[in-house]
Image (cartoon, rainbow, N blue to C red; front, side, top):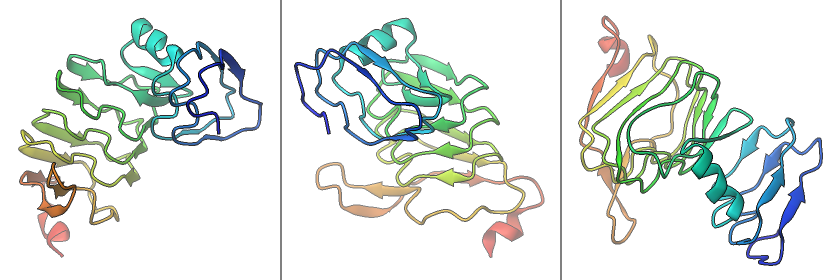
Length: 193
């Protein structure tokens, strides 16, 4: 829509809009003022990438959260604790962040979108029981990943692409990540079905 519009400096998103599509304002390098109504419940990948607004938001807090959606954590360092009010981790929110040691995901999280932690050095991922949607490749290219802990007493229906491994040069699927899946005590037989 507005992608690469380098003359755009401010925008007011109208009340009633629920989704900001991927790459909508990407490359709008002078865009520094954005008004986002509370009706927005979905912000797709790279919606604000390359904007002055996103750069300023990262300076305020390296965890950029809009309407309880964590849209960017690429400037975070070390051990990160996501605030309890966040309900969704956006697509590619932490992707390519090589300074990330660990992420604590609160029980408030309902959605972890595609490639949320791709290309990060995390070794462990804890998925709380409140998560209802796991996007594809959430830990793609996470070479240090050793353990995935899930809190579901009963396995949730997830895509077979969630823990898929990719060849970083060709983006071809190479199987699944080589990490151990830990399930709640007494539920192993349910997960093996």
